[in-house]
Picture 1 (cartoon, rainbow, N blue to C red):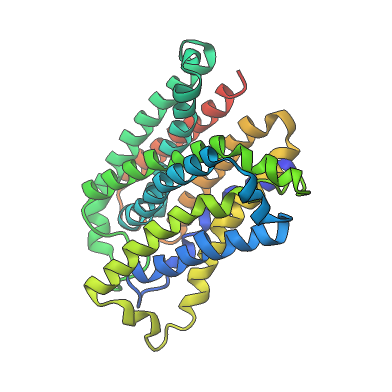
Picture 2: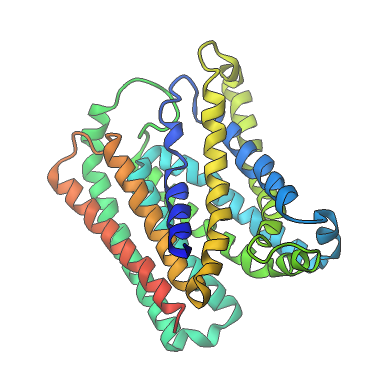
Length: 339
């Protein structure tokens, strides 16, 4: 059951942007505004209210230091999440997810070690983490080269639509955005590390241990909401695209964008009890399984939905090699956490 839950979490996280593909009458800021409102604001608070007794007491009894650190790292995660959407819209689900998740998984393991236990860098755990980082860099290089070879063919094959999730824009800019997103998204792991007090307070108030992690979602995702929603509102005002939200024939876009938000936060909510059921393996193998499942899911969906249509066999081969290296890197991170 533990493995089933962490794999389900990976599938939800890897597929959450799929509903964005058919929203062709909306531009990026329309979809992302509805998604971030649902995923970063509404559903996290709903999960807290449904699973955490006395949530306001939990917040009131948590130290100011923990509150401050969670919001700071939440802000970093917010910028990472914002650039996630921008990067994947340029490179596609397959390549974009691979680069961002590969970097986030490795940096998420390395940064806490450097900050909290720098002495471990010279120990087997630190050396294995550094080795996994080298695999990430190799995977990024292979995937980037495959994406560069794909770009001309994809540009010629692109259809109409402004949308939601069409591969567009400069490949170099998209690559830079994805790399920045991957590094900034590691702030999520730091937020969890320094926000452990929330979970302790939730258990003290009667929350089930498997659900205590939900106490952290609402405060941690608030900066994500303000970063993304603020940027989307600015874009809609600048580009005069806010009116597209009520465009005729787009009523069904709202539930699809809301579904994106539900899938995103549900992935994190499902992972917590799954990792706990794995016992001592939860923080190592469980994390590696979820990350690997995310990468595989995004790449399979990207291939099925035609993101590599028209690309040469050579370009596809480089991309597959890059994905393979990144999955190996994620597994190496999981193994390093057991040392």
